[in-house]
Image (cartoon, rainbow, N blue to C red; front, side, top):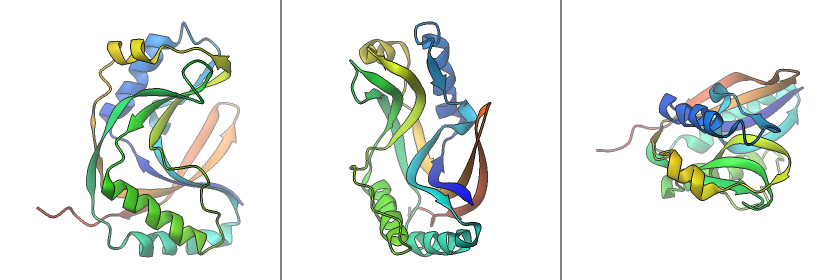
Length: 186
């Protein structure tokens, strides 16, 4: 049994934003659980615990779902908090929701629903989780945006299937499959 999720890996400049954000805020958000920069990713679908024997089916469905999808460009946007800035539990960095990124997401949702995974009930809001806060706290997102230039291009050329194992040191990710998208047309 493995805990699975489908995601897009982030380039080094985006991971550097995570490092910069932690350096800026770790004294203020002392109860925050910071996501290690190497683990920062755009989750497209969380699958949860799945039997090992289903992994091959999942990879095949992902390959079929993404066979006609092309690589695309997106970008990081600005910071935000869930559920709100006044009662933040999660600090995140937004990702531009481009039409091609939305198609990739929708194809994955449909393909995995055919395998019995439920459609996500929440609308797709692409973001990178940077920190989880132990208790709700007010966070000044405008101040963070003014101190950190969060705008970075994100080249989406592949989608990955990961397993996640929770440990005392945090989540440990294992890449199970990488599905390359078709090259973008010039």
